[in-house]
Length: 372
Image (cartoon, one colour):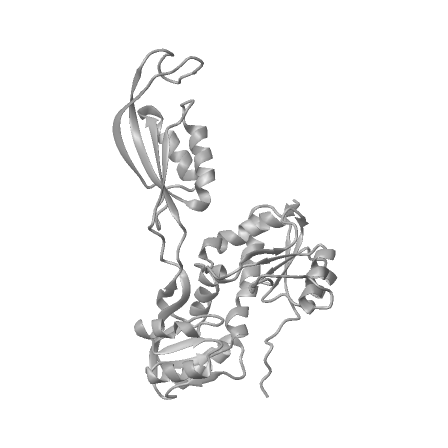
């Protein structure tokens, strides 16, 4: 079954919803036509000339990457500029690019969750909760006999989900009144006569991203010709997902032994570390990529070691002064492990839908740093 790039992206965004992305980020479509047909996808951490050439050689119509190709505003596309050449090549060869960045970092099964799992951490909590998806309160007035059908239709469209609970509503019974005018075709009552109907005020919560679908489902299930409903913006948001994780090892380890474990898990030959090598540690914080700025949060949550990448000189000094050991395992290594995992998740999701899509991982990308 032939599918479009946008259909594949919907699968990606089910795993890593766009609302999880940080405000400064540019996750989403970068290049190409979302409506173009796709049967082969190349997965990569970054998009550069080498990856673009690999996609062309392997006849991939879409590249799904972690780091956005377009992070800052573009003022020109010039063919005497490396980025301009890259963009032109992608467009001319009809290769789309989609980035799942901080939304994939923060997702329930994303980069940081995987990093914590590979480290063997349990009793996990989020280091920095995502702002969370915005919600609306939807209130609709329904005849008593039809309230279950309307409620079920809205729930199936995505309304009423709070944490691990679905079909969350509140119901208040009262009397609705209306006067059908000439030309009306009322479900209850007669034109020219005041109608009084036993109704339920049905309230539920709806993610902003699903408002359109829920309203459509509600209107389709509701018996009235004209449906009375209210939509209110809410301030409460979900805080169960976000950047980084902190958890505990099954048993305490010497810091030197933890360094060895990290190198084995991430396939490293070297790592930059700081702190007492013989210190016994058990509570560990992790953040894939460049997460060093979260060290105060890690320390406040009682972490004894922070595993991340791109730690700067003065940040390292501050961590050590606060008594927090650190392992700088590199930006690349702490994130790239997600690429094969994403390949498996997307392949399985497409298989369940009956879609024939081939997901490949790049074979030409590696850490830009070489340690001699």
